[in-house]
Image (cartoon, rainbow, N blue to C red; front, side):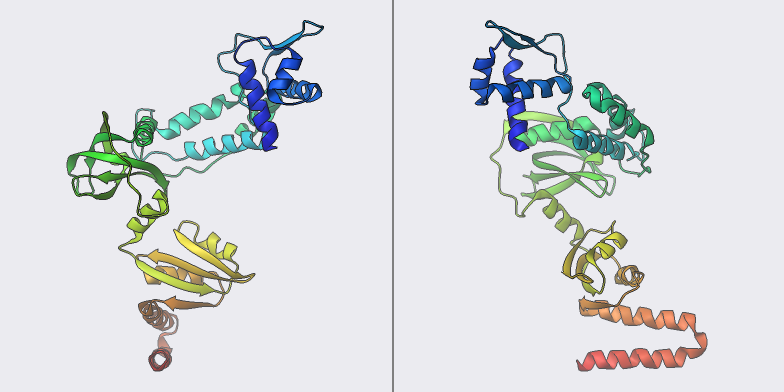
Length: 342
């Protein structure tokens, strides 16, 4: 399939020069047989490209003029994926208005226009999908597409950028940094950059960045101290939190479904067993979330995690059976003694 796609793109590139090509010449350029060439030309026509032909000894292939934007070369799955992606992005409603210039309004506009740029055969299916797909709104900080585009271009060119930044304490400062990546994580956009002033890597919320200016001054890119920008960002955001490791007697997919909004790593240990690694603000929260799966689990690390579990179990048992408080406390004490001896 990849070879066919490359061949089609090369054929389109040749025809978009506006020249007339004989069948023999075009087939030779693409290194295909005349029969394959005829098949590929028909595919282009199905996609909506107006390829004209002149039969006979002096015959030729030519792409007709008059189209400023030809139809997108998308197969059925790609068209559906594009539409669903736009729908999901359009559902990220900004917490504050951005004068109709945010990602969500732009995605909504593109969502309604997509079928105009698709091959004729896909338009009915895409229109039907657009009319029947609904995505629940999710509140996200407003980010302007031009901010992401400007920072991305500067990062690709290794060009310094300046901007004003509103920090978490409400203080506005002017920054000049070496942009590395724009990263999307948990419905927020971040800029990962090297900040020369503290001489360290920094992350900036894009919804707090304003007055972006490029400097036409370039820097030598430096290696990132992580496998990826997203990994570095995750480590930075989770650093103040508590690391927790839990073995759960349930399939990894079941655990992932319960913790779908939690940034975590789930390792499959068997068809009905997995190991969960994550960082949390509250051990009690994680205990309850895993407990609600309804299967056995083991709190592996850290020791404090197990202590919190015993305390929580003690409180829950007392709340459920006030008259059995002495028995519950005695059971909890036995668990503590057994843990200390081990």
